[in-house]
Length: 171
Image (cartoon, rainbow, N blue to C red; front, side, top):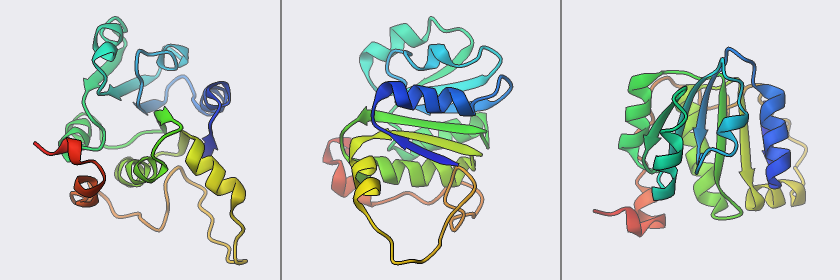
């Protein structure tokens, strides 16, 4: 199942409704752990964020594996994949209201790599698109937390479009 929201309370409620106490959760965009702290303590949690203020707060959560890095970077995906090759729940909150194209690309890459049962995404642009679109009558629906059309295993190849969309990532 894929859940989409914008309001932080709805995002957190959707996430808590889907997470079980023994699940493996990958949280992209954890910031200082506001949502992370709500997850059941029995979960195996890997939280990622590239903001400097995240580091000091997230290291306090000794039950969380925190990775300080930009989730758009292939090497951050690879580092996470070295730790764990699948997850039960993928949570994505990369600023809530910004860059739906980047959020969707991050969702595609991470979900097709880790094959979650459930994905929860917080992004205003994607929700607005979803609520404004009407389909052509074609029924393409997935039951998993990733797009089942992209079921190949392993890490997808480096996505070159990120260089075009995020020039600040260039070294």
